[in-house]
Image (cartoon, rainbow, N blue to C red; front, side):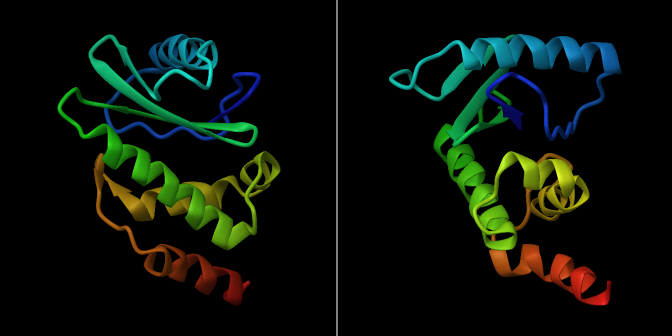
Length: 136
C-alpha cells in the first residue's frame, strides 16, 4: 500500500527478499504504477511478477502475483481488504493506516496465509480485532 507520493504505508512479502531487494523492487513497481493514468488497465507485468493495483482516494493498493493468477480475483481481494478496513475504521484513510499499522497488518494476516487467500468474510476477519479492542 503506497500513497500518491510513492511512500510505502503497508508492505507484506510472502517470498524472502532482503531489505535492499525489497526497496529496489518497491521503487520500480511504484514508479511504474504511479506513472500510469486512470484510462490504463490495472495490471502491469514486472520481471517475473504480475502487478495488480487499484487506487482508492490517496492510496494505491498493489499486489504482486505469479503470472498464473487471476487478475480479477486479485482486484476483488483488494476491494475486500478496503471494505474490511472501511468497516473497522469508518472510511479508511492514510492516517488510519499510519496510526493503526498493527491492525492493518493483522487484517491482512487474517486474510492471507503464506501467500494464499484463506479468509474472505469481513466478520471473521474483524472478530479478533474487535475482541482485542474490547479487551483494551
